[in-house]
Amino acid sequence: MSAGTLNISEIFHSIQGESSFAGWPCAFIRLAGCGHGCIGCDTAYAERDGVKLGIGEVVQKALAFQAPFIEVTGGEPLLQPAVHSLMQQLCDLDQKVLLETGGFLSVAGVDSRVHKIIDLKPPSSGVCDQNNPENIELALAAELPLRQSFEFKIVIASKADYEWATSLLHEHRLTDSCTIMMGVSFGKLDPSELAAWMLRDRLRARMQLQLHKYIWDPALRGV
Image (cartoon, rainbow, N blue to C red; front, side, top):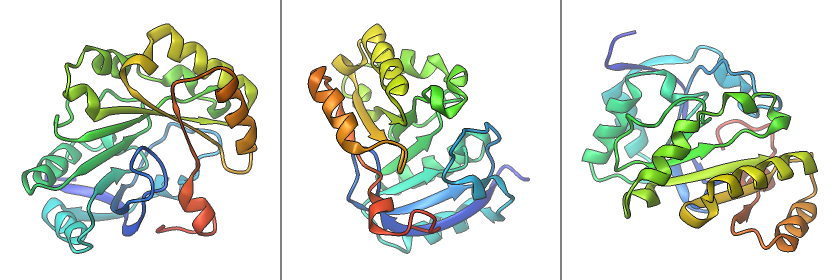
């Protein structure tokens, strides 16, 4: 695949379901390919080969939705080197660009204008040992206002996940410095349980639900 080509799973227009931008209309560019094997992955279809598109065509398709935000996601978008050119071109066009990454790869090379939504994978994912610690280091080392371009997202499926997450947050004092979004794995944990734990512990994090899964069928693609 050439330096100006991306392997695309889908490009679509929807309501942002997660992150601090939840609820906003958003154009999504979902890149194909990942391979990290998270248990319960809800976009496993993006593992399959997509369609090869030039960066210019991808930009054109995303801009056509006239959305206030454009999110680059996957799969794991950072596996494709050309994604950096894509994000840079979108930023150069004065677009508000979000990157959602699984947190396995460093975001060090990502354009500083991009808002980075970084997963912290808990034990129930089966891959918590693959979280890249450099992403936390980069966020904590960033000066304001650049630090505000980092946020961390944790999807909780059990009490063990929650205890793991709070230990990590306290160890790095992440809640003092960064936006932390904590939500439940859809259908695996009652949101009221997570809410109760967060309130009991006075946790300085924002609770979220996977909004798109409440609006549409959770198995539906392109939303």
